[in-house]
Image 1 (spheres, rainbow, N blue to C red):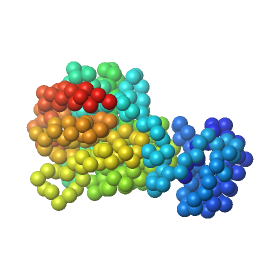
Image 2 (spheres, protein in one colour):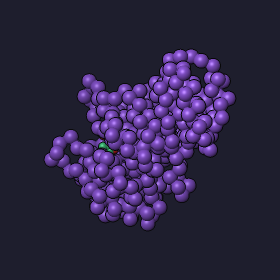
Image 3 (cartoon, rainbow, N blue to C red):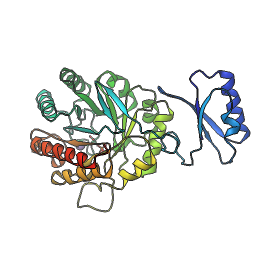
Length: 336
Ligand code: PEP
Ligand code: MN
């Protein structure tokens, strides 16, 4: 059950509501976000919600049968839209195309990518500065200094930044320089990190765990929301299956399923999803048709020389072609 409080609810009224819930054997948790004030109740008893709905300080009350509550579409009819400022929005009819290298590699790489994005009318650049690599001997990113350089150049050109945060201690040091914190597939269930991102007033994109179920992804989002941050989006990036013909198995099913289960924007990452450059385009287009709110993919000026994930990275020409095709699909779909 989700109880939405009025913004000015008194402490006494909160107490009365909590006691009434307790009388019905509900365990309650208060959730205060930048946008709302809620009481989440977990319990089994079915009772007439009007018994609580008439109490002082209650704006609305919702019965949510899903195990995750605040991220469920069962209570929030309107889709969540994330506003990055400067007219850049994601979700609820605003489709976002985000592109950039797997890893940020230096000034030239940043500038060439920014020029590519601007030439194609894009305004969100992806790239890792803290890289979770399977082997400790692979390039592990430029770190905070790389992020600062990227931020300076991005801001000069009106570009927003989405980049991965790997651990709690990085949240604060990155804060000034990111527009969207990305939680990587290897950290989807790092509950300490999720809790701390709940306290930040910047958007978060959570990737699906390498072996994570759709419900587990939703629970991860519930962690961030219930810790206070509603500005969330989810990302399908492929899962580990027995299939070895592709790096991961992109779960196209996840797009409509997530769109149905949650009000949060759903983003597709076809680069990590399939892991093979030549097949990124069909997966990106399929995700667009399937109802995603955006795509994020890897692009580089010379993919074969990229310091990481070159095999799945598009050239700028291929990226421009994909962007044009996505826009055509969006026109066809009409409803975006
Ligand atoms: C990335 O997007 O840079 C990345 C490492 O992706 P994932 O966490 O999905 O593997
Ligand atoms: Mn990558």
